[in-house]
Image (tube, rainbow, N blue to C red; front, top):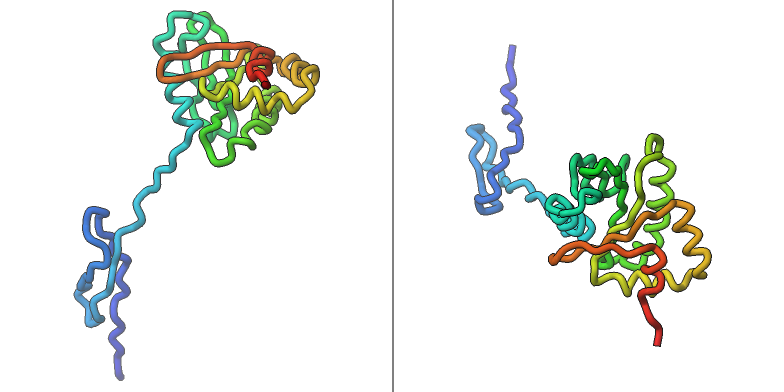
Length: 192
């Protein structure tokens, strides 16, 4: 009776990313050496909205106003499917649901439309009757969003702000945070 020796099948061998790519590794079998390479490094994509949220949270953690200073945070992630981008309870027990948008992205014009959809979605979530709704934009984006919103009839824009209702518009920059009303955001850009 004849037996056939089958080579052991080797599992892929991953070399740490610090090692040069296209190494040749001997597998202690009769097979020829096999070429191996490092697994692809984790790609960290720049997310302007998450950068804005992180900056904003940093300011809120040390804010003097107890209506804004964070007591308990529920979410601070722009990728959440079940919560607003920023959700927290303030020291004075105000619950905030804040949607963040940034004009510092390739689809900046689409973020204008997304603000409305995200806010509508937040009002449809259950258990949010006592939450105050707001948006967060970069301080230097006020004119961008104001100009874009001015393509909407002013009375319809203001009615949307009452429908939600939008408590405030937060802006954030390295220097701190500011607030303006939904109406003031619309009126900020002055056409020549």
